[in-house]
Image (cartoon, rainbow, N blue to C red; front, top):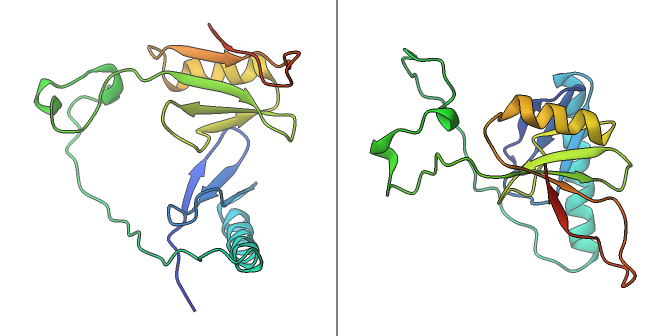
Length: 159
């Protein structure tokens, strides 16, 4: 039996979970407990699919820890860049956020460079509003929900 790290995050409609060791394996639920159970099922299903396809099953390698931080200024770091972080591989720049339609018909909000959603909302307008709440100063790009004549998604529009 293997133990995979799962990350459970609060969303606007409940909770979502993912495992850093299993890209693409995600689950959602109304409560943390439900999300944990759903994620266990999702991992088992994901691994079964990898095996059926003859793909290698990634070994668990992620770990998690917490650190104590004295918070004198409660402004999120993304809004208050700190000069000592420059050149250390930690970006405090306002990376763009993207609002895109999912196959389920709802809308995901994700940060540039990330494959996982920060939040999911039922409508594009609610997703735009939520993205602005999450990171007010970040550029926001919204997917045009229409296909081009070539069958591909249209370009992004900046909000």
